[in-house]
Structures are given as structure tokens and as C-alpha cells.
Image (cartoon, rainbow, N blue to C red; front, side):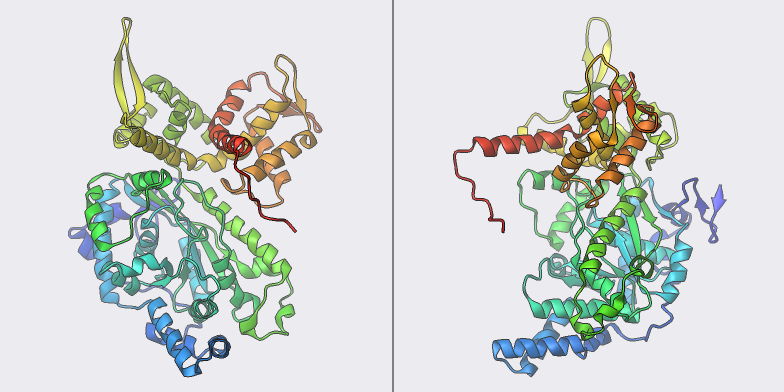
Length: 586
């Protein structure tokens, strides 16, 4: 067993169990909340109170310029417009109260030790590098977003690791929560509207607020590149607004560099699993409130397994944008920056790169593998067959280095433990026959809506694995189209590329495909099949192996629901008697 410099045990994957270390001590929560906290600081940071941050924003050239514009447009005095701006900034800004933060830490560590009974695992390889980066450059944490717990988890882990607590871009929904909203604000959350629309004042104030924190280095920034929580277990396509905002200080030479840290947060079991299922069935999302949180506190009595928090390798904007000429912005005032077409193109590619890094570092659970098998057997599957299928997928995953956490113990024991943990979704039924008794898994609840919710929850966990399989699955459909049963089938890349590109464009809203990278995606799929000895090559052509049927059929079955959904939608639109009003294309 290895140990880090603090004496905490590090497993073979480079993770420490944060809760295991804390549970060694009596009065764990109190000890954690009162621990010494001395994070490294940005060397160029000018010390100021949190109230000084928004006051400095009001003095900025950008705000003065937009105030003059709004005053002329609406026929108001500049003083009146400044007062409106001050109200917005006070509503937006975070505060800084260490005593409240420690109280919050006390409550959170109690909750997490209760619900994550198998541990909260944090990788430590990159932490020392981040500590060093914090001293010299502004830092932006970009976590994956699957749960409300994400930004709480990030702050708690930073507090544990003595990393600076981030300023978190949070939705306005949380601000209205009594007590909780104030505690979040005191812990570093600043509240932003879900949509700015054409509100020039709000956009200017928000942008300048982010910039002044970033440039001065008061705190690292934290925001979610996906914009909102993913309800389906897969990464959502990136949103580029905030990414542009945090890149702007580097592009207009106000900072030497900005460093982005992709963070992957992976849960064995989601707190919102049932809530997400009902939302997808059309049940309105309940409004965030303290009373609603209290009513939902019963979920804290269950075991939600473990959490893996992985800090990815730092991405330097100076290295990423270094080949672009920033002098093109010299003709404009800094507060009137306009991104060039080249910068916009690379900005979008950066968003996809961050998401791919999050996917690469995500730690899938054994339950995701079980859910993957269950989703291909909706009518049920025998326990023996389930374990056999999981074993087959494990052999593929280990061979191709999928990041899946395989708990210690025999596969049969761990699968059965997993089924017990998710007994609210699946059950093992004793089916008697004349010859033998079969253990067979079936979905729970005969009520139609309830039954649909179970399937959606299964699909949500299955989806967490699909970024490994989507490209090979698309190629499996292409190979199936061009294969002739009973014959030796050979293919070229050019033969497959057109169909592969069509399918990846069709599913670009469902999965992360970098624009104009179909050739690279096809190469990745071919490499997958080559490693699986499904395809062999003589340098120019590829031959399909005779034993490939099982792999190809499995991959097609996994992705089939997505293609069927598009097919059904197309059939409905074609058969619809109502005229289709499509937007004009110019």
C-alpha cells in the first residue's frame, strides 16, 4: 500500500478515501470542520474583501461604458443606472464568512459519511501540480455535472486537500432557498441567471465580475461546461458562453495564462435518480426550496455507495491558444473585445476537449455494467447469465483500459451485492420449474408509469458507459449494412466513412462528437475492433473475423434504442396529416 505525504493510503488507481481517513478520528465532523486551512495563494493577488470585488466591478471601464449606453437608450440618468447595476451586483456576488463555511463543512461531512458508506475517493496525482499552478496562474475548475451534490463535493474536497475554495457559478434557483442559499453564498457561490437574453447590462456586469475575480486571483473559478445537470447519465454538449468569458482575459493580454482543470465526479448511485426519471416522463421539476430539501431528507437513510473525484491534467490557455495572434484585438478597447473567427473555432474545440477529458477520467461503477446488460434484456435475465455477461464485458473493459471500478471479491459476490443495493430498481425472483429453480431478474412495479421510470433509471446508469462504446457501435451498424452472410467480408475506410459520418451527425445531440473529426472517430472504432480481433488488416483493407457476430450484435443492441427513437420520430412526421412548418433557410 502506498501513502501520500499526509500519510493517507493511496490505492492502485491513485485514489485516497477521504472519509476513511477522517473516520479514524473521534468527533470526525467537528475535527474536519475545525481543521487548519492554509491553501496556496495566487502570487499576484491583491488582498481584498468580498464586498470590494463588486465595488471594483462598478469602477471598471466596461461598466461605465454600458451604463452610458443604457442611460442614453432608456432616457435615465447615469446615477440611476449605476444604482440598478449595484443592486444586480449585490444579488450576484458571493460573500466570505469562514465561520459559516466551517459550519457548512460540519453538516456536509456528516451527510456524506452517512450516504456514501463505501467512501469518497479523490485522486492525488495532479493535486500537487494544481497547488503549484495556483501560485502562478488563475485557475478554473470545470467539473462534470450529474448531481446537485457536484459543487458541494468540489468545495468539500478542496477544503480537505487545502486547495483554495472556488467561486462557484450557481443558478438563481438556489438563491431563494432560505438558510441554504445564504450558506452557499457564504461558501463562495455567486448566483447567475439561467439566461441573459439580450440584457446588455446583466451580461456586462456578470462578465466583469468574473474577470475581476479571475485577473486578481481572489479565488479559483468553478463552472460547469455542460451548463446544467445531465438527466440521462451522458455528457451534454458544451455551452460556450462562460468558456468565452474566462478565456477573454488571456486573449486580451490581461493575464499571462489561465489554467483549466477538468474534474470528473462519478457516483455509484445518484441522489436524483428517481427525480430524473419522472422529469423525463414529463413530471415538472420541483422548485428548489429548503422545505423541499427537508422533505427529501429521507433519501439520506440509504447507502449510495461511493464517489470518485478525479482532477484531470491542467490545460493551459497559453499553450492552447499560443499559435493565435492576439494583436488583432489591439484596435479595440479591452472591454469591447470581439473574438475572431479563428478564436471562436478553437473555443468550440476547447469545449469538446474538456468534455472528452472529463469522460476519459470518469470512473464507471460495476452497477453501470450490470445496467448495460439489463438494458439488453428488458424481459429479464437469469442470474447465472447476468454474471456471465458481466464477466465478458469485464474482459473487454480490462483489455481496452476502460475506467471501471471493480470492487474486491469474486464477481458473483460483487454483482449480488450490487443487485441488493439497487433492489428498488430490480429484483431477483425465484421461478420454479419441473427441472430446476432459476433466479431471474425482472423490473419492478406493474404500474405503467412506475415501470417506465425503472427502465429510465436503468438506462441512465447504462449511459455512463456509452462514451466507450458509441464509436465502435456506429461502425458495427456500418459493417452490418455492408456484410453478406456466409461470405468473407472485406472493407476499406473510405467505404465506411460516409455512413459512419451520417450516423455520428445524426447522434451529435446525444453523444460528444467533435465537429469535423469523423475520420479520427472512425480510426478509434477500427482500433477498438482490431484490439478485439474482430477486424484484421493487410494495410489497405479490413477483413471481418468469423467469430465477430457476438461483439457486433451486442454493440448494435446497446445503441439501437437511440436509432429507433429517431426512426419513430421520422415515421410520425412523415405520416402526420398536419402541415410541417419548417424554418426558412437563406
